[in-house]
Length: 418
Image (tube, rainbow, N blue to C red; front, side):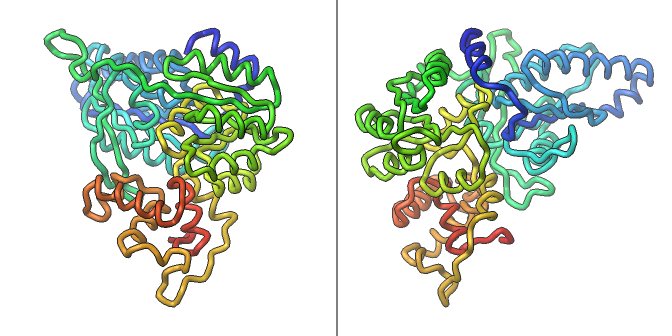
């Protein structure tokens, strides 16, 4: 993003600590051997040089150090792209420290829980375990990080299969950031060929002209985004979306004439319309989030979300994915759904059209598993899983995986305990 675009967003939108962050862990490989081989004084000097180099890189990418683990750092970012870029620079900085050992890195994104200045929860555990699982000089990231950042960094981010990580019940789909340079000096051996980015068309619906102008500046500054329309109320938003057929609409939840959720529902009930809706609001009320998910929106963000996270949301929604991963929405959905009593055969009446395999797939989707993780769980090909998911959504008349998660909880097919 250009400096003027960032400045425009910072003037319009405050920058509080976000709930959705990218968590990065580093670890020195063989730090004990470092001290044994070089002695305490020399080993400590190398260690200090290593951490000084890493902290300099973190500061340059807007990361916030949460803590040092002795052999590594835990850092959080508001942008998955900056986290991956930082991880690459950290590896290169670590490799440049004379006599320093190799380093490994793990990265995940999600909504960790806070306790004072510390963070804990699934994204923290996954990032830490990915770091443990990485090899010397490797950067392992989760699937959601690959989806958000993979096409926006210079280095290739290649799927690395699903892994069983300690403390995580389901297999975790992973990817490896291929950052090392060609030893013959020909440049980055793994850099993908440059290609023109896919253009994403966006409509901005908000009753505040200044905010619409600010969002337009930010979005139009991106090489892969174009604002094709604006609307100051809900009815106008429905009309401009019908005429422009954008990839994504950013919809304020409180617009005049027709509120944002009602407008979103009209947009999403059109079977010919493939526009994804990302809701924007100035307040964080879970009941509105739940209603939005039931309608089929692809994301729900506060207006003070950092600009990088906003752009991530647009790209993820345009790719046909939900901004909020099902593994994150389970906690929210569990607070509001009242499970229906299943039929005598254990299958809820609303789901009787599904085959046994499609029910299995729905259960795993509701647990937050990606297609790659479901393939590992059921010992199937990923293409086969994708077909089952598409058929399941089609039979149930659902737009996306988030709606599938909601239905699975509402019907009692899964509960918070399953």
